[in-house]
Image (cartoon, rainbow, N blue to C red; front, side, top):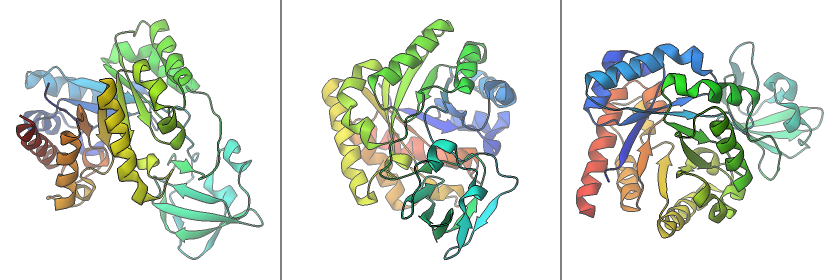
Length: 322
């Protein structure tokens, strides 16, 4: 079966014409990140997606990415500049209470998929080791800490309740920690009359990796989500983790997807790096059933070109498999 090609909806590709071009270049479906928005608020983007797919004669898939038990900072009055080498009051970061309770001096804080790195010091402050601009609702990781949150938030349940109305075909559950997480999502889908929606289990931490065997038959597809998974371990260990997950999925006959930074340079550049296309090619040779780009099409300068490089590289790898 051909490898599926997913983009991510966002301001860069919200026009029907751009989405139509992306479908013509090989996109088979799109992801909508519900960490920052609810389904009704994204009605315009979803309508554009379905309209573009209809024009190209494609039956598009729409995958929604839940909030789930992921730690995120709250609402900031304005984007916050964190200057490298300076200190910042932790209260300015709008951290969730569950995280604040775990933070002690020397605790590292990884923000926005690890783009920013802070270390807690005394006095309710943190030293900025790796700076940048922090925006509201960005991800937060506390390496070495285990924080238990419900599998689904109230917002997640509200989105599931209307998922059928918006043509949702798949649901991504972030930070899956156990089979119970997936069973809770299945129950919510069934209760909403959405038993037909495919369930994608995102592996984003060591706990998810360790408990992978019990997850394989509780979902429709495993997602190797390298952003937060790369925060859970030294980056040089990430390639081995990806290979391990892929091998276990192949052995169990379970589909898997590879995501995160596949064409990250194309957020700013019209041509990807050689390393990026090699990454895509190797993911397909490892047996990926699908691949996905995120910021490249959501906020990047070249959303259609990103799909063109993604799809063409995938097809080239498929020829090698044949």
